Length: 453
Image (cartoon, rainbow, N blue to C red; front, side, top):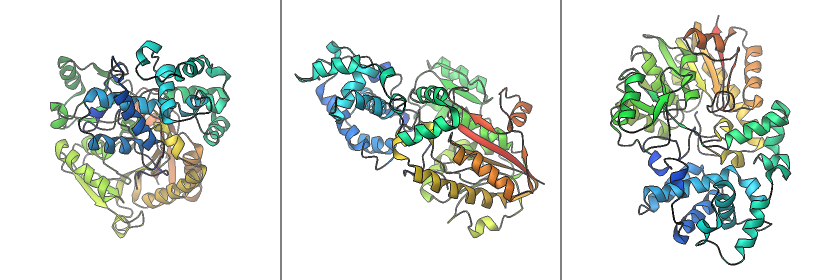
């Protein structure tokens, strides 16, 4: 019940920051993504990759992953260049298309991205350009972004731009779109079972990796750049995991305690499951439910590194599975990180804004309501329920929560802001948590907290 790789859902990450095992494909920094001399052969690689990506048949990180596996001769710098250039086009697809003068090809989109977004000059691109392209590229660079229609300027499809404007207003939508078109930082979560944040930061800095404490999560670390961590000792021994700071805060909203019975109802590959288990100090019982055996399989090596012994992965047929029903009214806390559009993660997954549709959003709303209602049956009197998405859309958030409250008077809303502040997390938040890349510098998350009376 997590996020299958389809137009109806999303993972929380991209090749630039998906997991340590995949981060080696990503640029260490924007500067690393542009080699000193651009060869036509390397540019042709980017053109081939972008052609696959623009079919939108699979998630962008999956497409890139497959391409790099098929082409192992590409070095880290080459992979970085291809990945970041392709992602630049995905972020800026509409405005770049406007610069293509009616000839919207993968080649022209990439050339426009290099010149207009990554700032390369004519000399740096000389080996790539064919005779007629110099004049076109000069005209493309001269196009003023402010002259473009609002949705094009924001690099959003018309339907999504209209939804966001109706919800936030024109000015806020443009600011949100601009922030979402920047690269996300690489955040880590410290496994409190094995290390302290201070010790982790000290070790990273000693090893030449610029790191600092995240401003909100008390167990988060933010890296300056995106180094490969696949073979880094702190990753291999389970002391750190890659996890956006906003995602970490959901664990503190649930606030699981030692010895309790807890469920991560849409566990996926288990990032939040591992956080919950660590907060429980590996005591009690923590169920990791998901409908995908493949995603739960990805949890196994992470679980082994974590050192947790209280996690019980369970692959279920649906939210109404008999193994779920047997736990009705028995759990102290349940987290529902529901399948959603993923539109709060556009910094990492820019392809989602082109792959989602209004119909998909409507279908997700039905699924989200059903999953929340099923998960609520597990909560015992006095227990806590958290509903969360990584979407900024009211249709996936407030609409679902308001309908749930109306249909389930036995659940009382709690203040998300108060719960976090009581744990020393200094955040401006009200009854419902609304994390934003603009205000908080994290992926866009929504969360609502309930207590069963």
